[in-house]
Length: 41
Image 1 (spheres, rainbow, N blue to C red):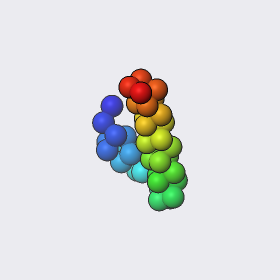
Image 2: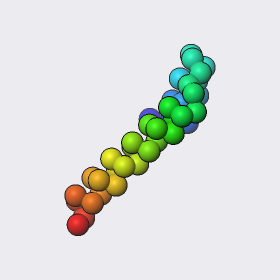
Image 3: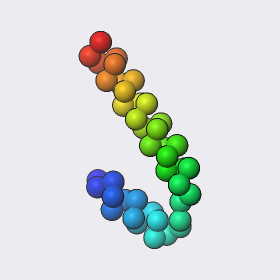
């Protein structure tokens, strides 16, 4: 799934406030870092 097309489709249906996008992005980044740390440390 392409994140850009997914976001643009979502944005076409209803506008998402920027803080929500930043919050989701930070959560996903934190989750990815946590999984990376668990796997490789």
